[in-house]
Length: 315
Ligand SMILES: Cc1ncc(COP(=O)(O)O)c(C=O)c1O
Image (cartoon, rainbow, N blue to C red; front, side, top):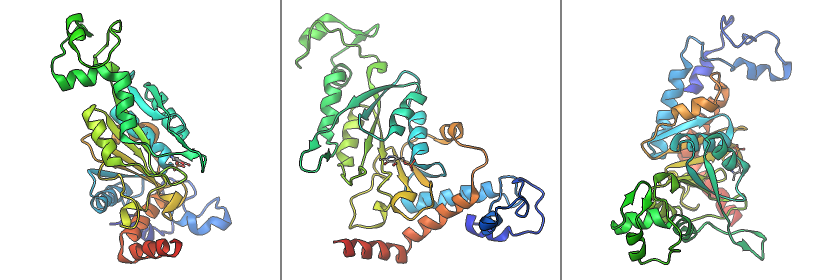
């Protein structure tokens, strides 16, 4: 049963479960219709199973390894992604002016933030795109040892330090007084990129993913403002099938209720534990059902046509 039909079915006279309003008591009158749909995980119709099925269908729509419904915004998706792919002490590369949830995610995971800056477009006064070469140059500058060692295959690590002979034969410019630590803890574990930015600046996620792969780093794309991208060829390419984790706010641009969002996973990591660490065990089923209805519409012929029409009218 879909989440939507589950909610329709649920207009019963007496409800002996939580929520305590039982769909009839202590109701704020203006929201009476809304209360009718407010069920909980204790409901006999097994909403958790309906949610699982709805997420499986979403996974098919987006062609991801898994797509999860979020009722606490992209904020929770970014935090869950960082929690899922890092461990305490790992380094995470983030844009200095990113949404605050990026830094908060890194802090909550007990990781170390490493900041990159982006050039500012003088005419508009806004940040330019994140170029793959910025990431690779940055990693090369800070993490030269581990990347180059892997590539050349010549470097051998003993007790976490490179031996001096190998250091001197290395053909990159490197401060010989440095004793590069090539232990995994020195490598960037994850990179978070915002694309599009709030102002609509889009980055080449495919190229950035390649750099991340070369450096064994997970790529997390904050696509909070790009939730329509998968549904029109007139829009930039979405990261949902490229990045390891892509987070989209449905409520920002795709007609969703506040604060509905999606977390798309394309790697072999399971985000369930991470999500359970930051989410309530009593999610709002009306909000979850609205996500199901929202993406079914976006994916429908009618929805796609509407998006294309809107774009044509803008252009
Ligand atoms: C780029 C970006 N990422 C993430 C977020 C957080 O999104 P949400 O409000 O869905 O938690 C925002 C919100 O403004 C944002 O602009």
